[in-house]
Length: 338
Image (cartoon, rainbow, N blue to C red; front, side, top):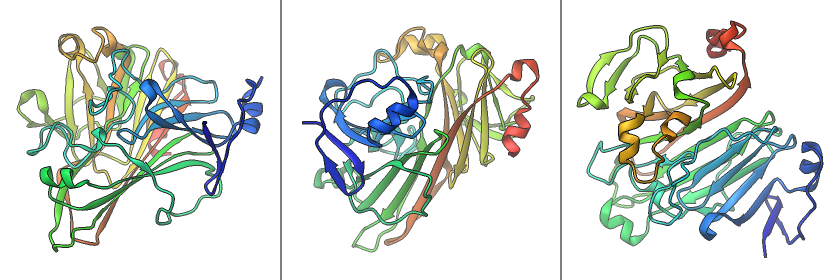
């Protein structure tokens, strides 16, 4: 039987409902949070807000796999060849890189959080309350005995995924050192967000101009960004250092702008594999690089160190706004400053 959550403290079995005729009707009839089965029987949580926006979070990886606006347009990219078979990481959505970003350490690529089964946290420590946020879920990840053999540190990783009143997607990560041996631990982190775009050649990223970055295609050599904005004509794999709290992704063809607001995450990663590397990635279609762009809120250059009992918090909020930037009706600087 499917479980439908209408409140954080109540679980009600309900029969299937007819498809509503409008987003408002849908919001009235369907619950704010539903736990059900996803692809290959993997458990997922579906969030819905009052206007009809939605998000899907898989417990495997604690990974947001879908985010739709109230027009039911998908904002995130998921590869058509994505493998939904644990422990293989799922290509797309928002994988969480912890406790290691990329190959910056001795662990597997991007760490292990995206390969683990998370659980719903029924009694999380309180976060600052916002009465306007109704649709959210709290997840938690703790190490197993086997995990401790590979990374010998105890921790509690709490993740809240929420939909804002305007359909914004909000992720809040809280990581606490629970070591009993008095030892600190150090980690790097990223929200590896795959955005859905119309055509990568029609996209530009604003907010990273003049910043220093590490170029992963040139042995992590340090450079300074030139030009007015980032556009895409070939493979890109860069870590921008001390990036601003707001970054804008302008999609000219879709006339849509993603605005990222990040807190506790000083760096930003920009990645697109382009044609040659895309063909070498088994779980990515040969031409799918054209319809995706990763812009990631991250903490990489200066790893975070936590002593026992200390907690770190990293927050990402993403909004999608209609724009006509190609006709000069949207000033991205106003978006970034707003």
